[in-house]
Structure formats: structure tokens, C-alpha cells
Length: 311
Image (cartoon, rainbow, N blue to C red):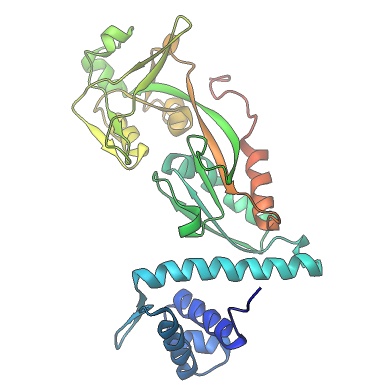
């Protein structure tokens, strides 16, 4: 294989990543025990090689350009893999360490994953976690994520998929709304109510509500005066403040149901669920921090009992 990088270039890449992480040439120089001028020369050397500007510089600060951000994410991931490779062959990788980046939907992040991160870090204090909450699909190659949680299996055959759970869906409303509008008993009555819609960020289309009607699986896009997009939790907030009925995951509203802020309706039409799936790229040598986090989430959520079993 022809050599692509000399020692000087690899050092320049490391200084570039330090400057990007710290937001300062001076801080990067201090961290690397070199002069700010050496950092500046390294960045200039990379920009000349690539033919693009990596930073926008002002007298007070630096910030990555769009090209710089893409280059930084890729370089950071590559340097992290080099560190993992050294630890693997020297036997140091038995203790998980380093930065772990995970993308997850907002409801699953807030209600499931974020509450258990402190426990994970108690087990593995040398792992730093960067949690990215968004309902959009991320690109592993371009955005340097280690893991993602999504609601459907991937089309990409380069990804490994492990189901975490089938999350039960419920229809809820506030007691004040039900007192004002009545309680629906059937799907026909439901269509006469204010139903809060959640619109998919990718398409702008409302997510259908799904039902189990005497063993038959049904879908319906109900109508109402309020809709939300971007964050499923917004629909629960609207329901909590009397805007109408909302179908959501039980884990999102279980505290509200227990404390009486929301009431579950049409229980006889329930029992349906949607999956949450853990995704990560195929890797011949999976880093110990990724392996540890995958095992931790599977231990926490996979195979858990039905959420409505004790309610």
C-alpha cells in the first residue's frame, strides 16, 4: 500500500482536532505543549493540502467551516480507531474508555436512555458519552456516530440491528378535556374528538394511530386542532394541558397516568406497540466502549415485561 500520510501530516491532523475540540489555537497549543504558531502552521498546511478553509478566524474566536466540520468528524473518528487499535493489541482495551457518540429519538432519549447514563458511567467511568437527541435519521459515515436508536430496521446492510423493546402505545387525555368533551368508547366516537397529531420530520405527514379492534389491526389518521412536529414529547404536553387526545408510548406518560394528570382511554382497543432498535456499523474489531454500551442497553431494555402488565 502506498504511503499517504507522513509523521508531520498526522501531527497536523491531531493539532487540528485539538483546535476544533477546544475552539482555540492557543488552548490547543497548551494542550499539545507546542506554540500557537505551530498550531497555526499545521492548520495552514492542512488547508493547503485540501484546498479548502477549515476554520473561520476572527480576532476573538475560531469556528469550523462546513468543510472543516465534516473533516473534523472524520478525523476524530479515525484517530479514535487508531487509539482503539493500539489498546487492542497491547491489552489495554479491557477497560472501556474514550468518547462514545449516540443518536436517539427524543422520547426514547428523555424517558429511557438519559436516565440510565449515570449508572453506565459508574460502571465505566473512563467512557465519555455525547448524546444527540433528534428524530431525524443520521448518517454513520458522515457524522461519526458510534450508535443510533431508531424506530425501524435499517435498509443499510452495513449496520447491525438489535431490538431493544416493543414499546406499548396508549391513548391519553387530561381529566379536564374528558369532562368537557366526553370519553370516546369506539373508533367512530374518537373521530368526533380533538386528536393531537404528530407529524414525521422526514415527510411532514401525520403518524397514523394504530389499534387492536377485536383481534384486527387498524390504522387511522385522526383530526384535531393541534399538531406537533420534531418532538413527540410536545404532543404529550399538549394533552396534559387539555388540548385533546393523544396516542403515544406508555413510557412517555406513565408518571402522568400514575399521578392523575392524564387518563388512559379506549383500553380495549390497545395492545399495539412500535419497536425501538439499536443500530451500529459492522466492525471487525468493535471497540470495548461500544460493546459495553450495547450490552448495557440490551441488559436494561431488551426482553423487559410488557409496560402495561402491572398497570
